[in-house]
Image (cartoon, rainbow over all chains, first blue to last red; front, top):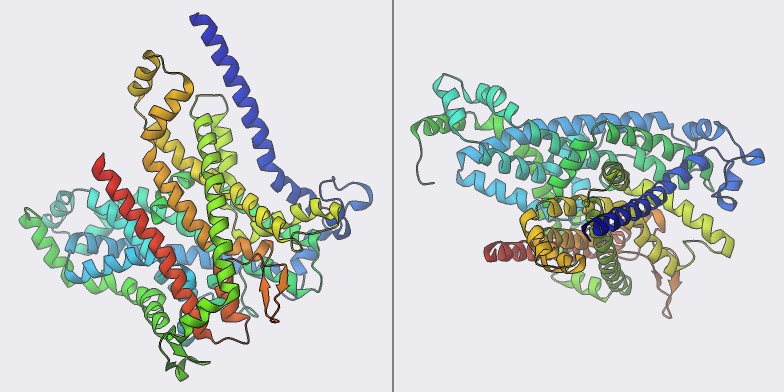
Length: 285
Length: 300
């Protein structure tokens, strides 16, 4: 009897594993479709979407070359702006919000409580609520270039980051910081030498959330930046459509492939941190 | 707040001296990036204007115009329908996958990696990937995703399922791993079969995860923008009897965006009023979530 149930359990597990493997393959198919169509001549992308790019359909790397120089805006510029904006915004958010969060968690004045409340409140406000006035404000203050847009990201992204950092700071005992203070550390040294190293797991989680947000963000940069001069990758892909009459689907797929390869590599390299960080952000709501 | 050690007090005193260093950057950026745009947004929703400096208070007029806007009302029902359908599908499938992956089968880690992957691809790129796929299929039937609103709806559902199942799956896996082993053991000894164990022991124990995922799914559904813009952009358009045209697959966020930037007949004040209504809706869902989770925590 016992052996029978064990055997049937093993069988059902094998079936389950098989079913999951099939779903897994289906899950990868869209990405595979991007890969095969990025090597296919434009005219065949619509008619033979799921065929391998063989014979007359084969375009080689022509799509990639075309994609890079397509329309009126070079792709490499979009990549550089995307990288710059993502790196600088994430750095600013991590540095300044962790400092502010420590202050808020430890000082607990009326001002701090108000600021914390506003941060939590900002998390339930959808971007559409502020997009018009935010882009006008950014224009007035000359924050409408890739070099200054990180300030806007710091402002709009502060809520979630402060919420997560404050939550973590409150969970670490204040005694360690007090000991540092008694040993003669001022607040600045206490923060950078004692608190910041302890914040490392939250820094990684918040960092990953911010990178994913800024890198993939479309609406904020398209409204804030002057898109004739500055485009990020999502803006570039969205504007391929309008820039060249009818869109070249092969070249579009080539660019999409180029833009998701770094994301997939980044994911495979720090998968554990990414999954943990994204799950930690679930509180955002 | 019960006891304040003296060391902490002196640390606090010192910190206060340094407050500009710790707070100034965030306070300034937060004021520019959130507080001021939010306050000005509320104000402008009550104003008539073309340029912000000419804004003139008109009371609730913009709200009345917004609520009478057929396109906006249609977008609301479309969004609500989409949010509920995608919520149910995503959660049921994500739970099923998470349940399967916690049975200790081989290759679980690989499957988890693959299922989570689409989550990292941005909404615009996702939209174009799937519009290529759907058009590749629909081409054979002489139609396209932008020509048929039924396909537009289900296409978007499939897209967000592909994107978000992996995300919800991660939350469910964490919940399932926290179900006490001895409870499952006890159920087995008492002779419960697999289904009884699932419905009477496992599911009640992962209720917190189900609550989180339900509200996440709902708010994600209501706030969806990039995917909607890139997949159909609201197409196809139908013309009403009175000559106005309505985009049949346009969701709330996209409707607000079009009212702000593509519409010549309405003032930005109307779009801002729509944005405030949208904010109230989304924030209401968020608060309901908070109240509901709090209540459950007390009960347990």
